[in-house]
Image (cartoon, rainbow, N blue to C red; front, side, top):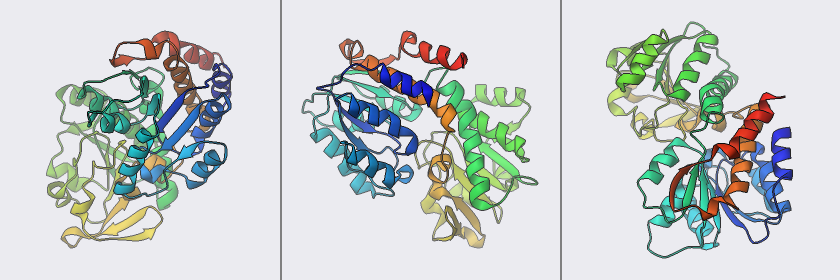
Length: 357
């Protein structure tokens, strides 16, 4: 990951920095955390999604000096405790994917030492907009080299790679219903077609619906008829419970359900009833007496059941995060409290270096 390595080498000494991270703890995060520790920062690790934690990664980083309270499939209670521990540790800065540390901190009246934060997800940005922020937070989700690359192109590719590998099935001869036509949904639909699926799109936003139709998709609202035709239903909306009990009753026998959203609540798993594992990451359930198959437990499919972005693509994402942290620790923390875009001057050099390779 040469871009990340160059960005890490450019970081100044970070003595006195206490960085609490709520993020996916998978292999690709190791270079950045190692570099922060080597530069003198103290780091506390917890996760934004218990299903994507790699325990060996947590142990590796703990051995190199990080503090951590995270493990794969930790309970909701343990996850909530991890957020409290991270804040009680006294961080000076936050690095988040989902804004759960910020939301927890702002739910109470006591002060904190936090001087600034980075946020990497659309769901986290939505949460932050509902808060009266006490420190500056820099949004690096809405960047051309983040949402325009990762969201638009890589989530879809890595999702279907994981699906095909884990199920040992292809999409040939299968009708795929993609629920949501934002950038993630667009990529999911494109790759599903490239992998042999017949694709429909369900979208409730009029502008996005028009865009889907202009892209040539059979697109419309999420109707019983669309659900009944689907062999695979994929949620990419950021909306809790978009597939719930009402939608489940229309699904045909043998339909697969998977979610690519950041938060594992787009599919109401409770509405599916009892589940039994067939193979790793594939569970059978029988609501209304018909077999349905839940993929990755309804959690983020590409990173729960697969490895997520390729290393070469994630190199751009991680280098952007490292550049953002370098800015946050210096000029960024002096910005006024509130939500701000990560300045172009911070991320444009990463884009230029990537384009020049």
